[in-house]
Length: 122
Image 1 (cartoon, helix red, strand yellow):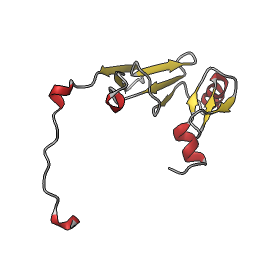
Image 2: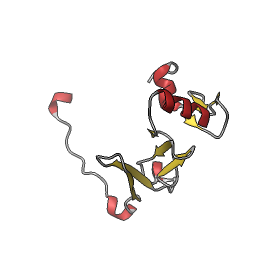
Image 3: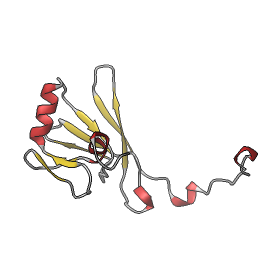
């Protein structure tokens, strides 16, 4: 991902309870408020922005009167955050539901078996 430009902005920008746009503490992307979401949704005839790439402890988090949802699908991120995870499901009528899950217990995860490296990488 480039360090600036549209792809960087899409990846690193986050919703916040602010007006319009703001500087992101991430050092990349921007913060955007409910007015930005409303404009985007109105222009594009949308009712929801579904996004990821921002840790939410509950697995998912609605903002701005449910016009934006952040979904986080990595439980116990980095083996230290203690968060739960979620998957957003949409049916054929775009009704939403979430599958919520926790990290597997450490004793059940195990360590993947090491296999010899294929000779074509040598």
